[in-house]
Image 1: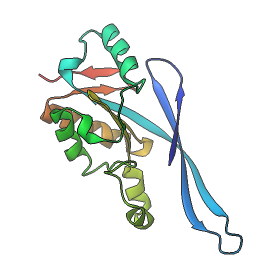
Image 2 (image 1 turned 135 degrees about the horizontal axis):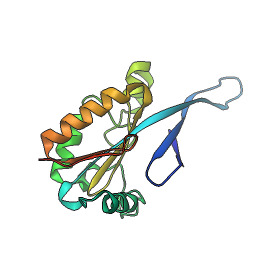
Image 3 (image 1 turned 30 degrees about the vertical axis):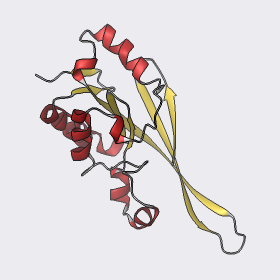
Image 4 (image 1 turned 90 degrees about the vertical axis):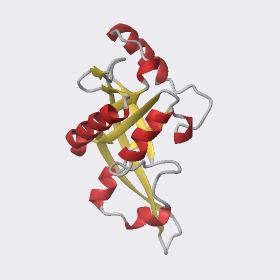
Length: 170
């Protein structure tokens, strides 16, 4: 799977996902066939509240720095995240499973999932202080509600990139 991010403005990121899923080689030619689809996604982020600035202007500058993805680790590795972010992810992945990395379905599992299950696969980027998720647009409301609910439960902040909503835990 490949993700291409189109930056329309610094404050709002619209992500167009081009899924290139390798299918079985064509038995006649030996060529690999590719399934292409284009989907819009809903971008949400949870963050370590102690690390994030409280004013909108400072928060947005911090967010831009976080999403440069310049930390020296794989962004598919949950172990780099704070304990609170790991707890959030461990619960979130029960519904919205990562599409990449060690928490994603195996090739065998992926071959047998339904279209509904495939729509639940989410592109996460995991940093030390943030987890950014690009959810299927068709599930935006469900993703937003669950992300918010679990952010509150685990004491992490919540940022809805579409609405510009920033929430800190009480």
